[in-house]
Length: 414
Image 1 (cartoon, helix red, strand yellow):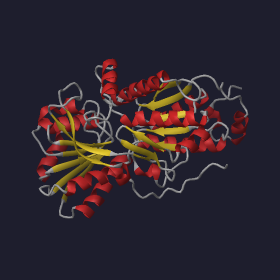
Image 2: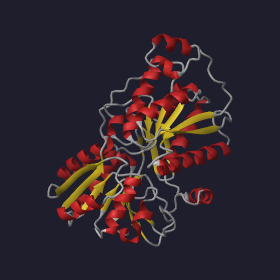
Image 3: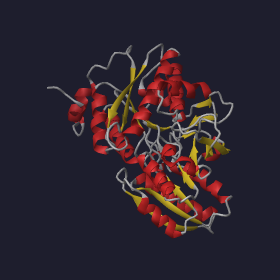
Image 4: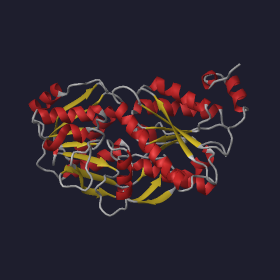
C-alpha cells in the first residue's frame, strides 16, 4: 500500500504506522514549502512573495547555510487562494518530507492550515511541522486560535490599526471616515477594530460607511467610490491587498476622489502603479518598513533584489527577519528539528535593521517597530518603477505595538 498523508488524516492506525516510517536524511537541504496563490487573480502577489523567499534563502545559503552548512530550499506550491486546496498542498509537502510550511495571503487559508497542522502534529509527534506565517494578520491566530506550531512575523491587524488610529487621532480636520474591506475574516477584523478604536480615540468621527466586498472578484470599484463620495467621507480605511488594493485606489484616482487612504498595503505590488501621482500625499500605509528609511543599511539589499527582478520591489522586510531568526535558531541549536527550533524561536530577541525584534513566547507574535509612511515624490527608491515611493511620517517602537493576548497555548509535552 502506498501510504500518503491524506490516508493518515482521520486514521489513528495509519498515523501510528506512518510515524514509524524512516525520517528523511539529515544532511540534505532544509526545505520550506511556500503555499500561496501562484495562479489566478492574486497570482502576482504570491509570485512576488515566492521570489523574495528564494532571495532570502539564497542569502542565507551564501552565508554558509544553517545547522552546520545545510542549505535552505524553497518549494512553491499553488493553493489558488483556496483553503481546501491549501490542505491538499500541505499534505503533498508533508508527504515529501517537508517540515517547514510558509503562507501569508488570506487569513481564511491560514485558519485552515493552523487546524490541519495542529491535527497532524498531535498524530505525528515525531514528524512535527512548523507554520511560518508572514502576512496573514487576523488577530485570532495569536489570540483564541493560537498554536505552539504557528509563528507570525507580520504585525496583526489590531497592532496596525492601533498605530493607525493613534495617528488619525491627531488629524482633527477629519470628521467622517469610510471603511471598506474584503469579505472574509481579515476584512471583518479590520472593520470591527477600526470602529472600536476610532470610537475610543476619536468619538467625534462619524463612520459614514462600513462595507465589505467579495475577495478577489471585483474588477471595477467605481460603484464603491460613488458611494464613498456620496457619503461625504473625508478619509478611507482599508485593509485591502493584492489586486483588490490596486483596483480600489485606481478607481478612486480615476474618479478624482482624492481623499486620504489609510491602508495596510498601499505600497503592495501594483498599487502605486495603479494610482499614480494623484495619490501623492494621500495614500498612507502602516508597515514594518519601507525602502526609504534612511541609514539602516538596507540599500544594497534593495538594489540587489531589484537587479534580479526588474519588475518587483523588495517589499517583505519581515521575511528577511523571519529567515534571520530561523537561521539563528537552527545554528544555535545545531538542529533543524521542528520542536527544537520552535523552543529556541519563542522568546528570541534579535537586533534588526529597524531596531529590536522579539518573538513573544506567550502567543508567538513577532514584536518589531512599525512605520506610518505617505506616498511621495523625490525618493531614493521608488515603487512599481513609478518614480514615487514612501516617506516616513512616524515610527512606533516595537514595545509600543504589543497588544494584550487571550492565547492559552497548548505546549508539547517535554
